[in-house]
Amino acid sequence: MELSPESWRVLGAAAALGLLLWLLTHRALKAKSGSLRSPPAVPGWPVIGNLHQMKGTVPHILFTKWARKYGPLYTIKTGTTTLVVVTSSKLAAEVPLSPSPSLNYVKSDAFLISFDEHEKNTILDVSLGSQVMVTRFPSFSTRKLSWIFMFVTADKWMVAMADYGERHKLLKRYYLSSVLNPNSQKRFRCHRDSMIESMLHELHEQAAGAVVSIRSMLKREALGLAMKQAVGKNYDTLYIKEMGGNLPKTEIYDVLVADLLLVAGLADWRDFFPYLSWLPNKSVEKKVNDVYTRRNLVTSALINLYKKRQPDHDEEHLCYLRFLLEEAQELSEMQLLVLIWEALLESSDTTPVVVEWAMYELAKNQGCQERLYEEIKSVCGDEKVTEENLPHMPYLNAVFHETLRKHSPVPIMPLKYAHKDTEIGGYHIHKGSQIAINIYGAHRDEKEWEEPEVWKPERFLTGKHQLQDMHKTLAFGLGRRACSGSMQAMNISCTAVARMAQEFKWTLKEGQGDDDDTVLFTTHKLQPLEAYITPRSTL
Image (tube, rainbow, N blue to C red):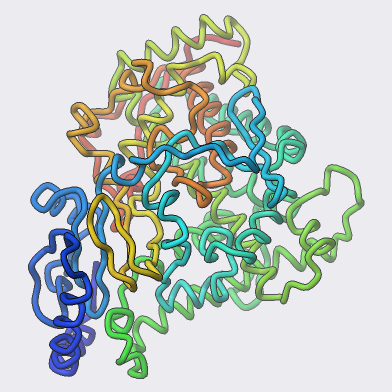
């Protein structure tokens, strides 16, 4: 977490201004909790709390370090806010999710889905319950977002960021009805297959013992698929006059995905001290406005190109944008833009991260790679791996989930807001607290995971987890806010990994054996994977 020198000077002034407020509220909060047990608290300073300890750190790594000292649930203070940090899968999922009488469960080839008769939504079955996300769900149905998130999401006009309620149900219904329902996924199957074939063709062109880096390829192909699903066409370049002319696919990816993720990690001291929100913070505001403007220009260009094409009403042109233009005409231009951007963002980010980490681990662990190859041969013979094969490949499934466990694309779940007094794990949680579930730390809990720092797919083959269970880890969330796109992410990631392992032997380039460093506050691999690939055979 990085703050500018200007920000730290303002924090010093805020300390003096907020001291009186802290003194007045501290006694009242202590009396209100009565005899209920309060969570352990990380010692900090008056007014600023633990902000000084977080300077220059990576939050999910620091939170994991504190969990080893203070336990799986503890509190910190970030200015005026109490943050409850949960670093345990068992605390996040200690109460089984009781089947809802409104849910009818049906079996699919590769996963379990359910249909909510009240919401009319297809949703992923969740085999793990959650005290935070299920039992106490009414207490935590609100997201407390920073002004940066509020700004770029048009006041939470996204499925992922909307408070649970009518808006969330509506936006989720839009996306499920047009992109993620079974019929839509069948319709988009040709695009997924084309994506896989394009990647394998590119790898074969570089093969014969060459060193390859797959990151740029994965980003380009994932964004291409996202464009087809969102706006009906894949664009290699976009002409945007305000941005200097033609933008290549790599720059489009940066504008729609990478830049926004970096802005999301900015810290603005005004979020920690809301009573100082009237003061300017020009450096942060400029960064956010620049990224926001570029995002809007690119997304608007994609929307306008669709409108100019006036595509036919055949299946080839069915996409999320067409659905929204026809079925959600009440949306404002900005709301429409944000929904299309969300579809592009979420479909472009997860797959490149998971596939790159999986191939890194397989190249590093040759025994695991050979075991996967043998499973592929036993299931597919001389035929190429397809999505239909995935339910019959338990070791591939284990590779996928172990990669999510060790390298979860999202290290901390989006913060929840306790809008009434409640309880987690026997601790009293005050109204107004924010809840952070530290996925990174929970996946490294030695009480739950044997040798958590070791990538070991075999841990998911002990019979503890069902093959169809999409929630073996916390990577896709829990309960009603579980990731709706997890099935698509698994299909694409597993098929890509399986085909790469089926057609090539992967060996790490010298010096990459212990390269687990990540980018800033994310779990994205810092240095691109570089590996030697050797064709195994001609399919």
